Structures are given as C-alpha cells and as structure tokens.
Length: 570
Image (cartoon, rainbow, N blue to C red; front, side, top):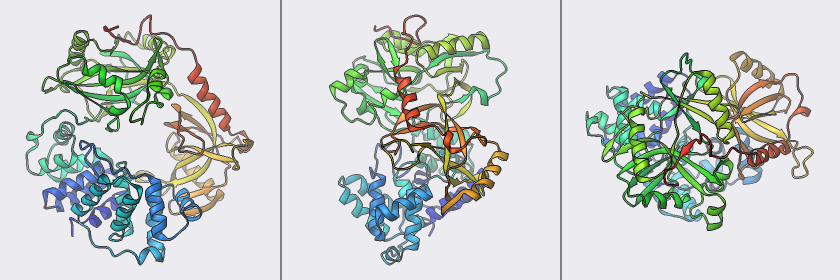
C-alpha cells in the first residue's frame, strides 16, 4: 500500500541507510512516482521536507520531547529516569530510543496492532495534536496513534511531528531534486516554484501536473533565505565586483509588510512576530507599500549593537514585558529586498535591489545597512577590524551583480569571520555517521570538566556536539582508539572513557537552560585532536562562564564614525 505511512517510514529509513546523495534521491524518486493520489504526493513531500505541517501554515504540533518521552515510557511500562533517559543518552536520540524500546519490550508490543495508516490518517492525527492544548490530551492522541503503528513508523511520526530534520541525510534541497527527477523537470524551475509558493507539497503536485508556471508568490509565507559561504571555503582570487557590509551579531529575519499587517520570520522559517512588538509597531506606522525585507534583528542601546546573547532574552517570549523591552531594545536593520508592490524582485541584481531598498529607506525612514566599496584584501582587513570593534561578527562580501539565490550557499555572498574562541574538551560519546561516513563513528559529544565544581557530582558534562574539522586519517585513528575506550553501547552510540582531548573551535557561547551546563557552543568543530593532553587539561565550566561574561561586558565602538547602518528617521 504505497500511500501508507508505513511505506513513507520505510522509504525514510532506506534513505537513512544509503550513503550516496544520488542514491538517496533515486529512492525518493521511486517513492514519489508510486503515489497516484495528488493529496498523498503533497503530504509525502511535506512530511519528508517540511514536517507535520507546511511551513506556510503557521501550525505546530507543540509536543515537547518530555511530553512524548514520558508518554513512551508509560506506554512501554518502564521507569523514565532509570530506563528511558539512559537509553536516550546512549543513542543520542529520543526517537531512536523509542523505536528500540517499542521493538524490544513485550509490554509495548502487545499494545500495538499495526493498521497500515494512510498518510491522510496521520495528517488527521497531527491536526488533532494541533487542536488540543493540554499535555494529557496530547499524550492520549499519541497513545491512540502509536497503538496502530510499527516501531519504525513511531520513530518517523515523532521526527516529522517535531518539524525538524528527519536526520537521514536528506534535507529539503534533496527533496526538491527528487521532485524534479521524478517528474522530468529542471531542478531550478522546481526550486523557484518552491521558493515562491513556500510549500514543497504544492510544488510536487505542480511538477507532476506540468503546472509549475502556476506557482505564485503570496505575502506572509516565509521565503528560503540566501546563504553565505565562509570565504576560506571558496577560492576567490579577486574581490572586484564585491561590496562589504558588517555582519551583525543579531538574528537573521525576514519581514513581510502589507499596510498595518507586519510579520517576522526566523531563518528556520518560524513565526517570531510576537517576540518583537515594537518592531511590528514601528513598521506598521510607516505607510509602506507591500514589501518583503531581509535583515537582522539586533539589540541596540545607547548607540551600540549589543551581543546576540542579550537578544536571547527576547526570543521565545510571546509577550515581552515592559521592563524586558526597555532593558533589551531591538531594531530591525534591512539589507535586502525580495518583494515590492506585487512583484518578486529576487531576479534583479543586488545593485538594483539595493537601489530600491535605499529609496524606500529614505522615503519611509527605516534602518538599512551601510555598504562599503572593496579595494582589495588589505581594505577588507581594515573593514573587518572595524566591524569587530563595533561588536559585530565580521563582514559580508556580496557580489553587486548577483541575484537573490534563495536557499543556496555559493560565491555570491561570502562571510569573513574569526572563531569566537576555543576550549579543550574531552570525548564523551561517539555517534555512528551516515552517508559517506557510514561505517565510522564521526559525530561526537564533547564535555568540559566539573570535577571540582560543587554544583555537580560528575567529572565531565556535555558542552556540545561536533562532526567536522578533522581529516579522514584522523577519523580513522579516532575510531581505532575509541574501540579501547568504549564502556557502553546502545545502537549507533558508544559511551566512552573520557580520555581523548579535543581542542574545539566555536563561533559563540549561548545560554541554554535545557542543558546540564546551561550553555551550548554555536557551530563547534574540531580544531585539533590533542593526543599530547590528558583529561586533567580539559577546560572547566567556570572557563565557559568566564568567556561568556567577557563577551557580554567588553567595550564596543559606538555607531558614530563610519557606522555599520544608517537610519534617516533618527
């Protein structure tokens, strides 16, 4: 039954177990072609690429990991603290742990009678989760649905419900490629349709019906963001034709405006309007034409852009209080224009888009970035140092003649940054890789020392996960050493004796109260495997706290001389 959720789950699992990207796409192509019903095709593409709900729907199941994890523990009749949590820690994944428990515990097996639920029935289950609000009602829905599913269905039901990555090495770009190949369309045409409709499900149906030309843009659904490549990863001999902007220490956002209606979306296409009411009020009062702006939300106070960590105080708050808004005032600074007066403008060059944006900014008085002509690498170095002095992350270099390459990471936008810092950490867990790293342990959980910290009983606690920054030879050597250090194994995860020290490089330190350390590292990666060091040399949680505080308190250059943005309304 090709329209069953079981078939989708098996397809996802087959993709997860396949190494090459082309082979993964081929599996998805076969699956898409097997779906005869338009609604099933739309749901299949949506479930694989976006989650339980289309990204333009604004809906979320709003089921937290503790809600479905405790529900699974009750379903399996096991102790959440003593059995479930150790399983989850060992596997590094709640959904993976739930799949294994459902498969191996007799009490869970006898409660389930797989019913080959259709994609439509699973959609109805997600809709019910959206409609109910209490944990009790959500858990009842989960139990009722799980009784009709196999373990692999339950695993992917949870991952799809969470609206995140399915963690099968197959993101939205690959889903789009599979749609194009399945229905003999150009990838670029399918990508464009997905960009302006905001719905991968609708894009799949339009592709099969030879109706891609019917795709049209509507305000108030988020568009895929253009991405930047690290300048080190792209060979750029000449900087001729590039302009520079300072890279703000803020939150990338997209703003849609039509009359009094203003909506904000984050880079992961989530709705964040409610966290920033003063931005909404400001732009609603401007009398703007219908537009979509790409820009950055920053904490801006006393003529300084303050660090991202302070912006976190505003994020996730549905109704920030007056004191919070006064303490952490925010500003939306635009640097690109995607839509103007009923017309998408992504196909215009940056120079042309910038011309329109500048005119709008002057007419309606809202902040936009300053751009600086680039006169060689030495000049870039000078601009970079000034950006750092302002408290910004670095520079963005952008080609003046580039179009808006939504969802792409090419040479048109380059980011010039330096690491936020390094820490000496210890390997705590090793997780099996996928794709070309299949057969190796290539993803690692790293820890810091708390053995002299009275707040903790452990010697080490996790501070981040890293899966890059080492060579293939180093990975092989790591895997050989890991064999001798393994003390527990559950599925694809190994628990290790903490002996291997890694100098970890990262972009930033962020507060995260859901972790044992209360902090996480942004974009951690291996800088060096320190075979010469021992666990005694590992940095401590106190070191992390000190580094975080130093960034918060460091002096910043006022936005006075050569500012990184301008605002004609001030």
